[in-house]
Length: 407
Image 1 (cartoon, rainbow, N blue to C red):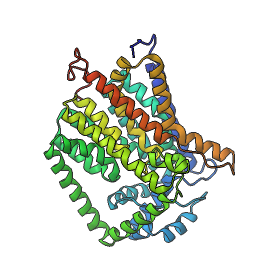
Image 2 (cartoon, one colour; image 1 turned 90 degrees about the vertical axis):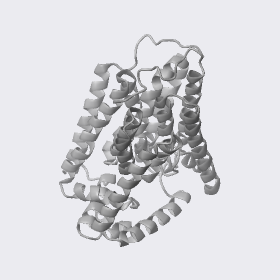
Image 3 (cartoon, one colour; image 1 turned 30 degrees about the vertical axis):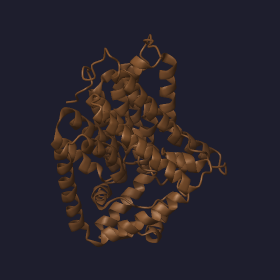
């Protein structure tokens, strides 16, 4: 394809600042609702606080018991469904901190600083591309703020790990991966990249730091918490394969396949194959000596390709890969292809928000399919193809680009 330089960049600094200000305002409105201004509605953040309260009461294992935790959730204002608790023990220490302050204040502290930090980390990659990348994941950011989910926390840790990788800071990279392990599947892509590249110091630091975190969590919460976690994860897996979770909120190939009627076993095979291809692409890029920034971008795509249980708020961190990849996409794809890429990204990050609104507005409507998993696979494929084109251009020096090193 030929490159056509766009006449005007689609996201101006003014537009970007307005969007960020609106997100901060949205966090304030959400906090006000939690303070009692508006109708009561149970969201994920309330479940976080409930698990935190049980932790503070010395009853953390009850959060992992489906029957007991369902009873506790039923007492929450506006409770309409059950959200199981499957997080590793260390995340209970975070939720305990959230439960120790008023809900409205905790939500503000949980969302606004992380939003600003993530925006700053993304813009440091490439200010121009970073603004566009953040706008493309804006629906996922809005979902994370509205529900009080941990998408922004995960995104910040992904960004810190990517930045550390490109600046050669093994200690910071390892610590970031250890902290990101509160969602274990989000470590696989970046961790595999470190392993493939032979960054064994990073692996050692990550392993050691995670061991300390888990030991401290076990000391504070007690050994029985591990049995409770294992039982909860097993039951949650059964619910996942039977399609009991909202598939239209998930961005995995598994969810897309299951939502169109494929058996769960076949859907899981599709997910496994996609994860294998994504990780193989990372290994290929490293072995071929591609520019470090392209290796990192592919590792981030792989990070969101592994788990069948991947929600819309999880893909906030995709903005880092998009900011890294955009200069290559811009120089390789024509205007129409770039627009299609952006629209597809917005569908991936915003389908769950749109589908949720439709279901709330049309009670009793049939469940929607989940195309975003397959669309995400398409974005990953286009990015890989683009990187390969750029890396194999005779006139291109893979290491001579402004975004190769993040400080």
